[in-house]
Image 1: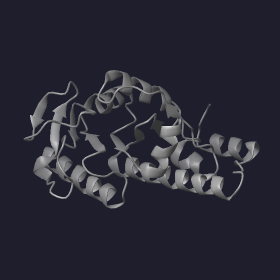
Image 2 (image 1 turned 180 degrees about the horizontal axis):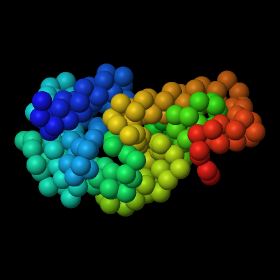
Image 3 (image 1 turned 45 degrees about the horizontal axis):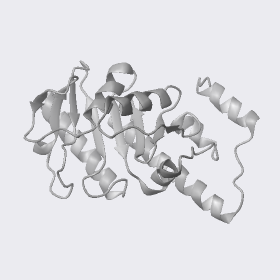
Length: 213
């Protein structure tokens, strides 16, 4: 199967899975992956409903946003996606969701602290919040990149979630885990005072995964 076709089919597969899990609604959210040469990016289109989306709707662009294949405009967030992919050779996919629990913390400008030890392995630690920037702007991409320096996911203030991975499957798992951690944190705040993972186990886990804060 040709590389571009397989990329478009993979992006569609993961996009529909994320949509089915309620990680975004309507036409919000966007997902991308780059090819092995790191020159081409398959990315969800702008303004196409997920219920009708096919592999032919997935756009292929170069790192400057020029359209290579597909009948639509690429996601309005293509700059953020390509900025992250260019700057991070370890990243092959970017998943941007509006998952409700995580986005609620983005709206109040609150990071999700390390309440679960697994957050270190999945996400690198806590889930920080990038400063507000206009959607679709290069500034939004720069802010996300800064927050992702030592993390695999972050919140975008008043906007949503960014998760990254070496491939699109890994990026999706991290986006799923962001929402799960945010949900648990939200429920714990309603039940009482949330207790964080103690410093020493947190330090050991970060050392295990080679994470330096």
